[in-house]
Length: 424
Ligand code: AMP
Image (cartoon, rainbow, N blue to C red; front, top):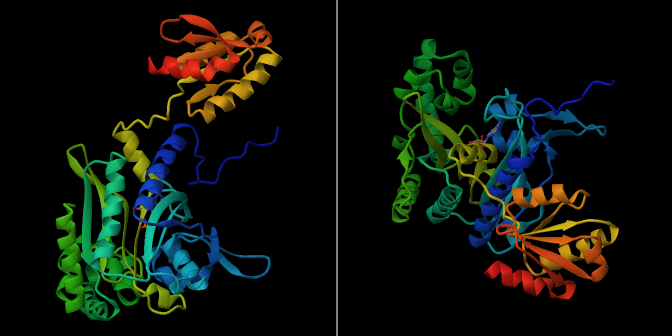
């Protein structure tokens, strides 16, 4: 027998209850996106690699270590997208969306790819939803994205959300900070891990993300002491707005988000929990302002801000919290016996749908007993049974699944009778 094949390592099929949880997240995201005026966008799964080397940044872990990059048969160098923001900015520039009323607000719900070591909550294909506001900026726009994401998490029942926030300054004032940080890191070089030793020259900010060099990090100069007046003022206003809408936040002077394109405010959402008495923080997503990305991708400088959230991690918490996502329960189940009854059932199913009555069936089943036990399992209120005799008479049996009481009803009267019974 040929060998059974498996999905690629770190990549999963989504079905059953996992699918239902995804669907719930999708529903809440789509609903909120509409309320806040974001339009959907789907970009290709594969992009020119340069979108990420120039956008995300050559010296970031994502681009340096985690990207699936290959040459096409035509010789183009392309990558599976590891994140959503640079492709959306590419689309904004490519389609001249700066000529439309600004800002342009996009949202997405899509799979991304990173060649990471698979473990719980970390996959090679994972899903993110996110929001991007491009073309007009300012603290209130930044705050609105934070509020939107925070509300979505709340609506999905995610508890103990911690929002950490910082400012990375703009490209100019950050350079000042980088110099001070480099100086500090060089002085402490003997205490740095090998990765950070390498980062000092190329990307010193990444040392602030390092989980090993905590002591050197704690003694490092803080970015907020180095950013310019305008960046300080913008940051202060975001905090003020957050207080206004009563969203709690924690200042984290070392939050840098690891990507090149951020300018100004950056933030990250965590879920706090306790494991054997120790506090644990699960990163759910984050975002920030990225005014320089448009220019890095060949466009003009455009203010922009956005956030991306990991769907699998949110689902993990929904399950852990015992947040059971109940699909809409069918109120009516159609059971049938015989060819003519099957035919009539198909039509009846459509009619019930049209009347907005949640309905289920098991047309593939021939045994009435199996169909009725399926109806009971689905907790339907009413079973409509069409046997051979009923089909010939143009009637159906309506069975109350609770009391077991049943009566015969003319086909033309079904919708009216079902509605009446469901109201009782
Ligand atoms: P990032 O784009 O790295 O800021 O990631 C935003 C969020 O996406 C993270 O906080 C995670 O929730 C999720 N995420 C990132 N990488 C992965 C991965 N490899 N597997 C699962 N979720 C991920």
